[in-house]
Image (cartoon, rainbow, N blue to C red; front, top):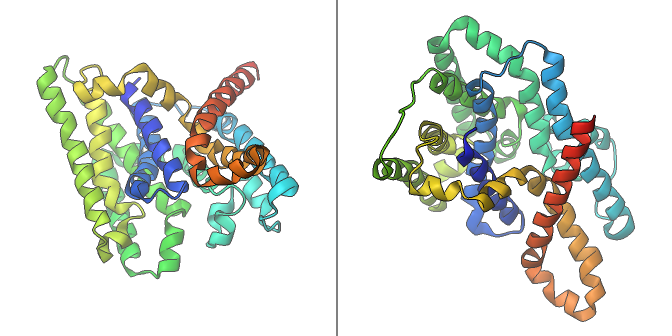
Length: 337
């Protein structure tokens, strides 16, 4: 197990939550984080030498992980909306959200409807479904040819983002076919590093310097994107973040067990704990915020209205606590099923 991956999950999940709370300082880290989650999912499949002997078992494990919480959150959001908010537009697309098929519809009114975050699950499920075929295909053609195929796909995505309209560029952000390239890139990184002999030991100073490099590259790309260049805005969907995210994943895997100062911090128990509930944090943040704003805050009367602008400070502790409770409950349910 690569512990630093767990902590990075938690860090990027919090960045995404902050972004959804309109904290624009986290825009770049959110874009990088989405790419990180897709690439890491593919990386771990290949790096761990995941056996796909039975597609049924492979799919079932992931269905148990994704769908129960998705259905729980979707149902709770709908119930809360019917009782308090009345802002959803219920229609033909609801079954698509239930089945996690909404990302195939090129319309923000569809793939961002109901629970705005579930587009990620919809797209990830396509990557999961495609995993056995991808692995068999890559194994058949060999790692060198597979790298060429993936890099050509990367160039095709980059070219598409540079020429399509803003509306279609927005859709490519969630499009399963586009994000499959992120996932496949992660698989290739995992397959390549899987065959590499990792160093048995490395000095703390050298490890710390190596850890700084991907973070410095990520910071450079964040600053580059924040400058407002037209090209970076067009490539922000995923292309811009492939290099820094790849470097981050590679460095975490190479230094696993030989972490430097940054890695030691990432291996602290609070960060590992946060990473362990990151999926629940991501899934629950809209629901918990709506509960706070429309149910909890009104009990405080006029003061409740005053704290609306500071709802994040109140919601975050409640969100993390709820995520932990749900995480424990889901583990018990999955374990007993």
